[in-house]
Length: 82
Image 1 (cartoon, rainbow, N blue to C red):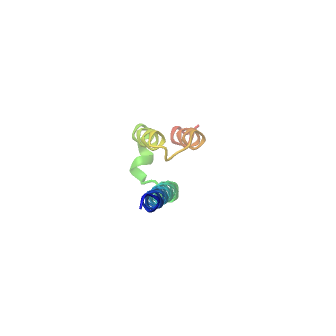
Image 2 (cartoon, rainbow, N blue to C red):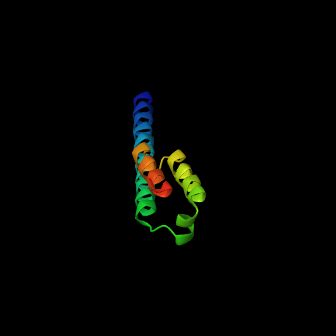
Image 3 (cartoon, rainbow, N blue to C red):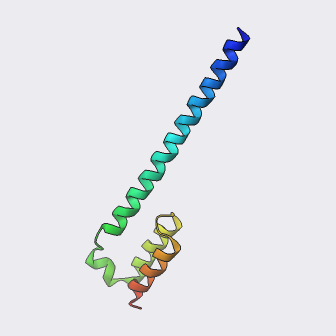
């Protein structure tokens, strides 16, 4: 009886770990998909006309982890016309 419970506990722990790993993988995939969509989507003409707003949006994406430091720096230069 005790051996069966220990086996059930191990099986439950393994199942929980697999579920957590699957959830983390799905979250990472979603973030990657959103990042790709953000980079692929053309910027609206109004956003390009106002560098301040564009920089704010880029900073938000960078803070959220969607843009890497390198991507942020390149996008910032582009927005400023450098």
